[in-house]
Image (cartoon, rainbow, N blue to C red; front, side):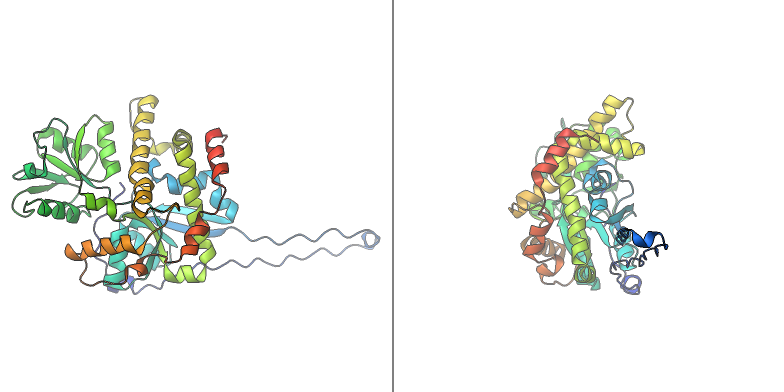
Length: 388
């Protein structure tokens, strides 16, 4: 599962923990061996060069399973991007966005991969100073109905039942706003039922318990894999607000900016690699994490399902974010986008105060240039060769 529930952060819990920065490990001094009397007449051997052990970095992810749609985190591990930069990175699934943020605040992680709304809430409601350093996508939720459904317009949802992941799902504010904007009272004109996702949601739709589903893009792709065909409904405004992102604390950025640059650069390199050859990425992911392969009857079907999942994530992830911010730079986040998101959260009652939207992102143009500073063509050629 990718999406976590809307978070109501506990100030007492989170602020009781100290934000932890990443400190450079200091290598032990290396001493040269004293030459013997015989060796003294020979040229001395060069003294060994001290080397530092890899820096340990943890990324806490607001999910339970790291499937192929987390290619931007898994491929840097497989391809050695972070290792080559001197880092030993652990990508740790921890559950919901709140769980991930607690790991960072408690010093157990240096980065979190969570919804952008959770980052805004942490900043304005709890004074937890998180900043987005890699914008990975826009809001990709959708309301769907079976392709042969009589529901063809938003007005047709009046009197219908909509299945949602949970009654505390982070998609609910988007659904409620969408319905309200189209003249439907979400409190009285529709019914909501918690159906989870995957097989449980599929059964609810097949049994007729619900007329529609409200889920995120990769969850809908999984349902399409098992035979569902959908008609999609989305508000245009959703594509104009950021969602899934990588964030860290301002303290970590200030204390170890180069480490932040390197981690994000590795992710961007993985995105370039994946865009050049998704087939290679899927096969590498299977080779390293075979337990995440789609549970299909045969490998050909599993390949088709996982490729559909990967493509859905690529289409609704960096591609939509890239289109939204209109920059040639990958990963970039802008204050304008986060201003729109903050306004939405305020109107939805998820926050009660506001802050300068620039405070939610690493507001430094040089940073975005640095994380994109690598040989894109070489990465693309390596992907096409797929010699791993």
